[in-house]
Amino acid sequence: MIELRELTKRYGEKTAVDGLTFSVRPGVVTGFLGPNGAGKSTTMRLMIGLDSPTHGDVRIDGEHYDRMREPLHSIGALLEAKGVHGGRTAYNHLLCMAQSNGIPERRVGEVLEMVGLQDVARKRPKGFSLGMGQRLGIAGALLGDPRILMFDEPVNGLDPEGIHWIRTLMQHLAREGRTVFVSSHLMSEMAQTAQHLIVIGQGRLLADTSMNQFIAENSRTYVRLRTPEPERARDVLLEAGHRPVTAEDGSLEVEGARAATLGELAAERRLVLHELSEQRASLEEAFMRLTAGSVEYHAHDLPEGSAGGPGEAASGEPGEAASGEPGAAGAPAPAWGENWRKGQGR
Ligand SMILES: Nc1ncnc2c1ncn2[C@@H]1O[C@H](COP(=O)(O)OP(=O)(O)OP(=O)(O)O)[C@@H](O)[C@H]1O
Image (tube, rainbow, N blue to C red; front, side):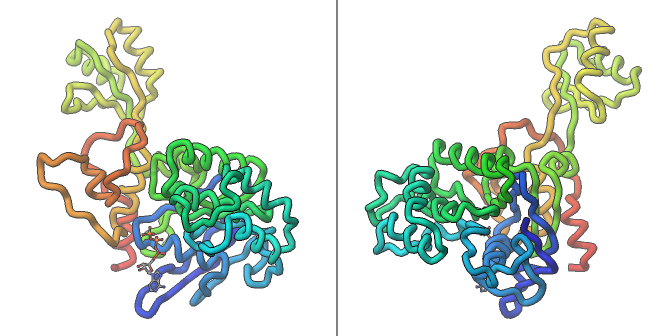
């Protein structure tokens, strides 16, 4: 378990991390989200003593990182994949780490095999691709077989096979009862990997909740009906006490009802349906609503008629695709991130 208590870090006038209190529990993958500059990397650095807090503290299974004699046995971290001595071979890089933490040499071979780098073990990492560098960083994190693992943007530079591999690895590590804490900008990836979420904005805690609850609380869920008899369908739904809304494409949207209930109603009234589907917003949409008030670096909206959806422009992640789940229609409601911000008088 990782426990943060009022963790605060100031760099001169800038408060990068602002009174964060939360725990990261074992047995699940916990995702760490926040807009650019929210303080994620700083928080992670503070967790493993690479920086010292201005106020508050972090405990790793009850202990402070800087008091651990062989920290790799307790916590493994992938922070900056390039933090590797370019002149040593991959094998020797890991061997040095192992020796300084009392880890037997045979473990070096094991972790190289686990990450698929056994064939380049004697090569120097300076010639590695970004993806290979990430794999080497992950090998280092796994070296001490730690109970706690922390990954900052682990899928950066990995190809689809590599992304699938790291996702499966993280879920496997969590199922073994380990604490797995991971940050990522790829919402679709996070949605598939994490069961719990910590969201921060401008250094402050915005949410500490399960993935399902986070999406449900920060987005609209509704049932979409498509029928060749929309007028009659409206009447049937209104009679049954529902409040259908006609969408731009002519389909009907009903909030607060289950698809099964509406399907049974349609069958009873012999209403032909071409579509009956529960629509749940993607993690990306929920994230954007929540953090709308705390985004520091806004991309400018594209001129009308340009390619790309509104999510792309606002998120500052042009390459990032939505999760594939259909999004909620209509203008976004004020995010509670916005209210939070106003409440703080900022
Ligand atoms: N060493 C430092 N000196 C001064 N300011 C810093 C330092 N490290 C971070 N900051 C500032 O603290 C804030 C948080 O930065 P941090 O890198 O932790 O955010 P992040 O959430 O990881 O961002 P990103 O998603 O863009 O990587 C930023 O405004 C950053 O400029």
